[in-house]
Amino acid sequence: MLIELIEIHKFFGSVHANNGITLTIEPGQILGVLGENGAGKSTLMKVLSGLICKDSGKILINHLEQELNSPSDALRLGIGMLHQDPHDFPSMTIREDLQIWDSRTGVKKSASDWQQLIAIQKDLGFHFDLNGTVGELTVGERQQLELVRLLWLGVEVLILDEPTTGISAAQQEVLFAALKKLAGQDKTIIFVSHKLEEVKELCSRAVVLRKGCLIGERQAPFNENDLVELMFGRQITRTRTSQSGTQDICMSVRNLSIEDFRIRIENVNFDLYAGEVIGLAGMEGSGQRQFLQTLAGLKQATGGRIEIDREDINGKNCFEFQKRGIFYVPSARMEEGLVPGMTLEEHYILSDCEKRMFINGKNSRMITETRIERFNIKGRAATNSEELSGGNQQRLLLSLLKDPARLLLLENPTRGLDIESANWIWSILRERCQAATSIIFSSADLDELTFYADRILVFFAGRISEPLPSSGLTEEKLGRMIGGKDWPK
Image 1 (cartoon, one colour):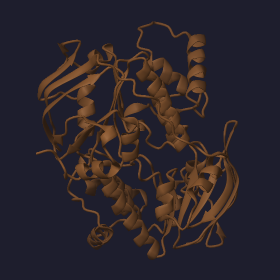
Image 2: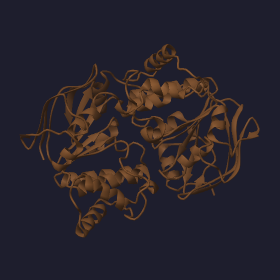
Image 3: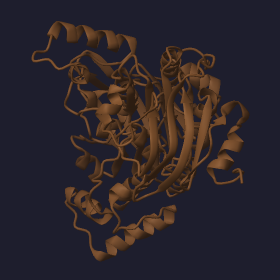
Image 4: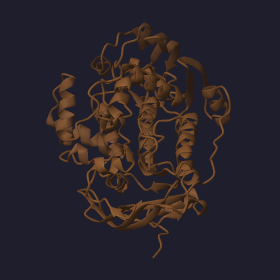
């Protein structure tokens, strides 16, 4: 399917999100769409998928002009989008979830169609039980489910918006193999990303957006420095401040045990020092999320102690943890971290835990403008959280954290952020470490773990290693431990 975008414009108030973008996308091609956070990548893809309507311009499909006023319009024309955050129903079975989406297209599926879905899943190397519950799937498996759903509905043009965010290296490998196979079957793949190494590995062509404009395009093989220059207008270098940990103990974990329907973890012991950064490494679903939620008081441990100032706080609710300066940032931004329909200013008002009968409008607006400026959020006080790009939603989440804090528990803190934004976020986090705030964070990016963490805990099949100094860990060694190899006897 041939796609032609001609002079696409889209405004959000005074923000010119897409500024006269003209682009041709050939069938059988994996096109990389690059750009910094807020460059207009997701907006352009939402226009093409019918999720939002363009203000002006033309969309031609196989040389015929089409109006895409809803995702259903796009699906009927064979265009589907896999979003950063899963669009499914966690409490339903996979079969029920698929049937709901099936009904929205107005097409009734027969028993033979279900066999077709199973065949698609098998062909792509995916494995999930149709009678299982969606909520039991990992982020990567929910992504695979959405991909299969779109193909089952007859999609010929697949748009993937930051698809590798929050999934394991193994799941990324399976995904890339599936996309290459689909491109070989003459499907059109649009791969939106800010990760240059992924675009270099997967794409045959790349276009770069900056501040709503199409800056340029390149054919494979790509020069990474050239793409960075196009994305940011300059070269970006990563810097790390010196280790700021002290010998003062922030938290002690003794014989901690965690259990749920997915995994069981036992006898975790370590001391976390004030100002220290500990990274959590492991394949998705290895227990990092449950571990962070337990340390935040969101999940009850089945045994052991969590000590703050020699007081065991295990068993207390999350508000008691917050009173002691322990705060958690989830990976699922719009599901768990932010409130759709609420503005940035309302989020800052809500995060103010002081009990007041009346809201000081002048004060709340001043706080909002100050934090928008400090965290470089590309939005306004009246902007709803769901209108922000993924990277700016992450900035909003981090800007809501209380200061000072004793401990920050971060699940994939740079999820969906470009190189420059990730560097900036870590500079802010390291500033907090200098003020004795400790950080425990999970990440699927081994380079991020070895670069920013002082020590690393490795998760594998319910086991957690002792804290390992990151200075003695290479990505290769860390990868082997994540896979269950080279563990101490």
